[in-house]
Length: 115
Image (tube, rainbow, N blue to C red; front, side, top):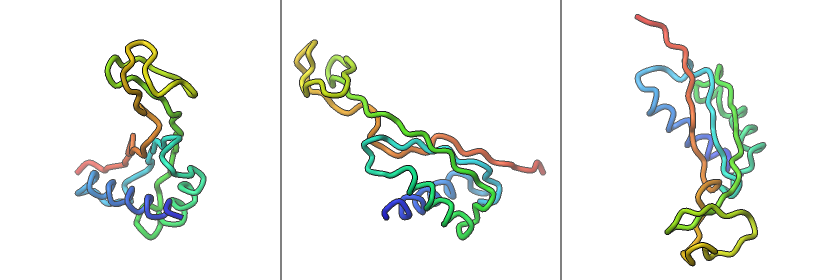
């Protein structure tokens, strides 16, 4: 299950982003998982629950959004749907995946006490 290593990488990334605050200050993490990212959202949630206490994120809740895969022409940016050709019908340019292929941290919510 590579989702466990992805969760560890998530915690590493958040550790860097929230420095100098402790992980215990994090209340919520919002993650976007692309449909074609090769990540099972349910396994990712399970790995998060298993790993969060050991990494100091016991108070953190995980919110996962699954992003649909979309393609677009690289040249003219025309959006294409599922099952359409890999060549743009408008200009003949190449079609590339424009969303739904990655794993992103969209939001980190923290509770920080003013000093």
